[in-house]
Image (cartoon, rainbow, N blue to C red; front, side, top):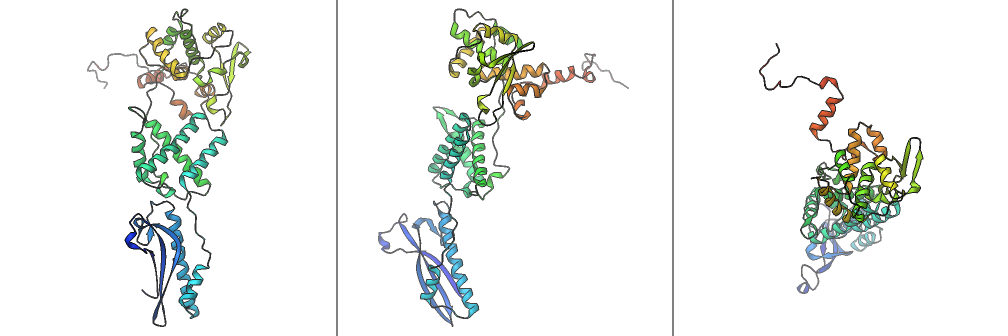
Length: 421
């Protein structure tokens, strides 16, 4: 102790009746030296916490609003030392009563701690007002539930400082073990989507000046991305589906027609309802179908124009260019499994298989990538190439077909022992 000492402690009056879970006020004791004589005084800081959470003169960091309380204590200590040092320079150290009065009547500017989950609710309101797509907003909403449950199960208070690599590892484990249905857990892609939404929130909070921490930018704080086994149909497989006689099964026939049309247009299931006569226009040498994809309707409002193929026109003519509404996505996927079996297709197909089929077949027909993207509505090539189902050997064959330098007309070179001198 050189000239002044500031100590924070808890007022434990009636100590016999207190337990470690009891809440007690936090007091401050100041001891300082005046003319070789030690003086002291005490006062209440106005803060309090459970006895078990007060360690080393500070509130343990996992306690709610711990940063706010600790900042208040730091501010008090800084003010005490400031008054003492100023008084030393003036050579007029105040008596305890005056010293105490100077401390308590000084307005302390203490940074208020943001409530993490409350801020997240504001993030949800922002995206709701912004018009974020339903599927994306559902993930944002579900993430709030997961963060709340994680905080309760781990018995930790979430704040911006706590979102570090230690949190990341534990939260990944929580998401991977979470059962959204009996025996069913999230895939790594779904887990990665939740991590992506969390990073979106942290960036948004930083933009508001609420988040000053950047642990989530660490390279190990990754967005998981597991490659998806893309399935598509070859042209002859689509033809086999279209050739099935389903005249006695109208509901199954309608599902088949919607799927084949999607293979010809690249539409998502959620866009089927837009394929109406009013959205079709006759142009030179054909017909165009124009619509705004639901997935990007509110964010980009990109209009997509699709040239309708002869196969699509033949189907639409059967309904006077006004197709009946399809069954639910779930029921349609169940019916597609049956249709695949009837057509002798061994692949497991679903509604989204049609979109991959369109993109892949158009690419194999050597249509420019940019032209295909204008029809599928993809805004980046990175996202588009995820839809292509081109295997290594098939890609090599296409590469060889387009460049004579790789075309070798001498078979059997590997089976003989010829050497070129």
